[in-house]
Length: 227
Image 1: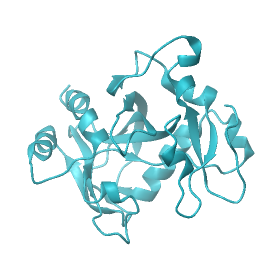
Image 2 (image 1 turned 30 degrees about the vertical axis):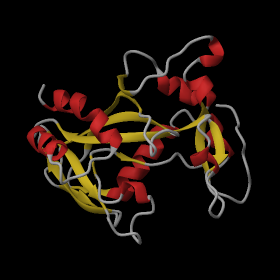
Image 3 (image 1 turned 135 degrees about the horizontal axis):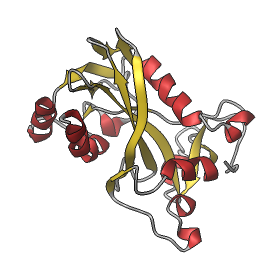
């Protein structure tokens, strides 16, 4: 990974130049809109090769959030029980005190994720930084009564809506034998295992809002659950 706009005394998050991520500086155009299977392009390798760290915010100014020349890689984790054929789904808090991103208030999601934070100079050379972020987010956000048995990348998300335009999702699947699962973090208003039918019902209910990434990944997710 290369260094990118590292600043001191502020929160730093991992970013990747869009031109490097999508191969524009190689004469390629690997950009896509929506979900793309992992087998097509190894974007994880590109993230690790070209990623660095940029100041996310300073007061009311959000540098990484405002610069579409960069993408913030987000491990976006689908927690499934293969035997139950269900995935952990949750509704984000509608309370300002509990959830900082106003554009996601009260929306349904089935992806547990967060920014890759800078913790020290070794992050630049850490090939497991994405998986470590994934593990941290799972620990902080959900409670399971079982264990994790397997994990892998299902694909990638690049969605051009106002929330997602500066983010790039690496969609991980985490398989668990948990019978019960629920939210730990106050940012989650409610959460439980959902079946394929429940996912479809939520997406088709006009009274409910679903975040863009979860809508983009719901079709491949249902196919995975129904195998």
